[in-house]
Each structure stands twice: as C-alpha cells, then as structure tokens.
Image (cartoon, rainbow, N blue to C red; front, side, top):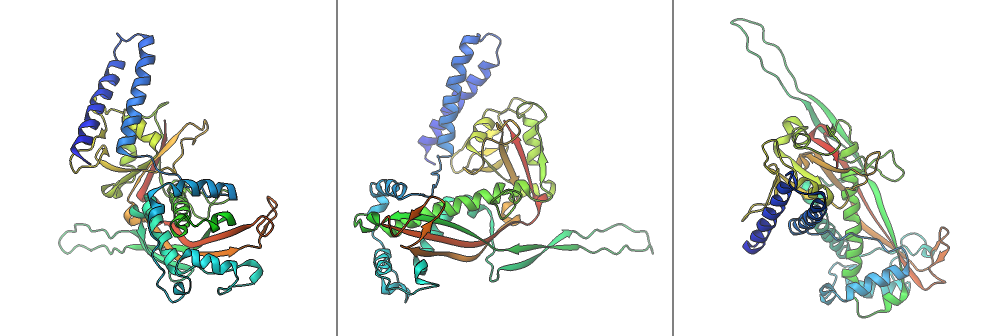
Length: 403
C-alpha cells in the first residue's frame, strides 16, 4: 500500500473518529445528528472500500442471454486481449485451444465419454488448470485453509483429541501414567457442479477469448461456493454437503450482551477458541467491518487498527479477511452479520479429489424450464469438481452474530 493511500486513509480515519466523538456530545442537536450520521456513514463506506476493495461476485449465467451480456463486458476488458496459450498435452494438441476444441465438438469429432446423445466430451487438463488458478485467486479460503489433496473418494485423517499431562510427585511416590487420546476426521469427497447454457452465437464470435472467458466464469463460481460452504455451510439445509465453521460440532458460539455489538463481545469472540487463539484470523463481511471500524474498547480506543507502511489493518491486533459469502441477514430479525475467528491454516481442510471436468452437449433438454439445446441453437457446458471440506476441530473456531 502506497504512502499516499495510507495518508489518505489516516486523514479519513481522523475525520471519522472526530465525528464519532462529536456525536457523543450533548451539544449536538437532533437535526445535526442526522446530517452527521450520513457523513459518518459515507466516510466509513469509503474507508471500507480502500482497505477492503469490493469483491466481484460470480454469477453463473442461466440463459444464453446472460452469457452474452457477460461476454460483452469481457470483450471490453483487457483480459480479452490476452492471447490464449496453446494447449500442450497430447490430448490438447489435437485442438490447439478452446476454440479448436469447440469446433471439434460441433463436428462430433472428439473422444466420447458415455453416450453421444449426451455429448460427454472431456476438456484438456490445461483448461482445468486455468480454472483452478482463477479459483485460488478469487477466494480467501484457499489462502487461509490447509490444502490436503485426496487420492480416494473416502479417507480418514487421525487427529489428537487430548494432550499428555505431567505432575509433581514426592520422593519414591507413584508416577501417574498418561497418554494422549486420538480421534479421526472422516472425509468423503462430494461433487460440485454447474451448467452454463451458451448460445452458438457466442461460440461463433471470433472476438472473444473463450479460454479465459469460460475459465473466469467457472473459476469464480467454484471458488465462492467453496468459500461459502467452508464458512457457513449447513448440511441440514437442502443443498449443502458439508458443515462450515458456523455449523461445525464443538464450535464456540458467542452472543451479544446487548442489542448491538460492544468491545466486550469482540473480546469474547477473539478468545473464544482458547489455546487455539494464538494463530487467529478473523473473517467477516463488509457490513461487519464497517460496524467494527466505529467500535471502541472500554478505554475509548478504537479496536480497528488502520494500515501503515508494510502493516495490514487489524481488529484488536487480529488480522482479518473480508468474505462476500457472509451475509447480513442472520438471526430472527434477519439483521445480523457474522464474524468468525479461528486457526484456519491448521483446522480448516480443503481436500480436492478430482479436478474440474466438463461435459458438453448440443442435444440436451431441460424439463424444468423447457429449454432445448438443439432447437434453440445452444451449447451446454456441465462443469464438475470433487472435493471434501472439513473443519478438523470445531473448538479451534468461534463466531459471533452481531449488528
């Protein structure tokens, strides 16, 4: 972060904090409070944008029109000007790149997996690698979590449950035997999937870099879905295959003492995971960050630390990350957001089992919306990826729903 940006941030912080302090004075009239609140909200929004730039949310297109709209924006971007690198695997050399591959699909001249009527064609590994690269760059969970690939669909990881203990004994006294206890993490990879219905008009468009465009769409979507499930996944719901941190067994749940969050609540959250707290990282929403940037401790000091030269911003000396997958609609009143703390690097495990694969069809039919790829000049892409998402120790995490 440049010196100019840091200076601008610090000036904004000074103005924000002066405004908050003035708000607490009895001399501010009701009319001035309304104006002051609006100004403070604007300053806080600007600060959040500078310290945590807005994430681009991936939305998988569901119609041919959606794909074309996204493609037009992509064509206007610098990424579309990047030249597609030729595929280098034995399979990939047959096509050169994604455009050659799609032309071969249209002619039914590529290898078939399953029945031809389903159009089960395999994409070369280079395209899968590009999706993985984008996914890793789009989501915070990939840089926070521990990555342990799986070679089978099911696997058991041992974990230590309790430690050994020692005790002082008198001379010739009896020493007490002690042993650690162990448990396990039972992993089972599940499949994440998406279908893009793409008009043939787009595929005929020579102006778009299809390698980069499709990799961006799917990479973003898979990354953000992995992040959502890892943080707030709930197997009791209709669609989630894994429990995230907030629904993990043994997670520490912190509740607000009052109607709105206080310093004491944040203190309780940061230390809620006990001996695991030394390596804490906090993950929260942008709405949550805005609230905590205005919060003071019991001595009147702000708990949000602004960035400095070579120093990232922190919340009471705990580094934090912003997630677009944490909502602001939790709780009975649907007005709470969430902050999660924990040792992600050891106890949040992402275990890929099978890299991204795609099947392509120009004959498929969707009974739900009565769309027909053949009749409507469309090509459908079905992307799948298999992985396991596991919270190895719920006690290593804590979360607080607040407003």
